Length: 364
Image 1: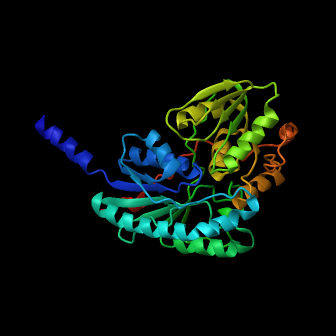
Image 2: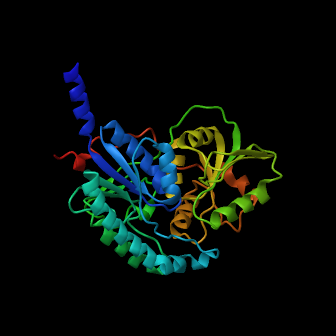
């Protein structure tokens, strides 16, 4: 008995620690790391989760039993006027650069302190090391920023090259979700396409929600969209559920017909709602698009004003006759009448992550 206990103890102790660090920009980077963390656990690794703000809060709720570390904020702020979005990012760039240097310092400490065997960073540019295998998850091999796209893409490529592998959550072929974002003319030679990365499971359930409104992303645009949608849809004779995307304390549910409102939901709760919804009204954030493709859901996109990537994706799917879209300021309830004329996103079946996904971390 003692001998058996000893071997169990040794097996538990030798699980390799892998740092998983998503960027706190909306909740998408954190939520798409959930299937990666689950897979790490399934393969006997020990994930250590690091982020800041709402992204960290969400992962703490998803994986309460695991170690959680705080990384510095990138100070990503949205302007009230979408035309100023790029300049606001530029104005905050010294803070972002300082955060990247701070990250590098913390990673050096954590490698020693937690005996890390590997790093998985989701768009955190300073979370890598030359000492241990480091991977970056990004669907933005091209970073759209208007006339300065060549600069932003070149800068991003510079950081991507610091990592041993670059994981793109998308299909590698002509049918794909990210378009030119994840399929530039010249690919980094470390690129691996993972397929669609979603925490949401498809279920056969009865449709009990006519419109599910999923709000997300930084303020003030999140609140502006919520106000707009409530004004436009308040007289609709429909079953409407609003998920505000405000991660705070306990989950709260309120009823003000026709709206049932939740401040936020866990993966489990959101999975139930998405499966039960006829139509999803949401931002055209990339993680949301992957979730919808996995579920084969009808959607209506309202991109975050001034965010080039979301505007590009919404226009792309609209142009290809897949998903209707409009700008935040132009949204009216009448726009929803066009939904039956769109064919929906490319289908993502129950995909499994590559069997050798963590090959970099397998070495002794």
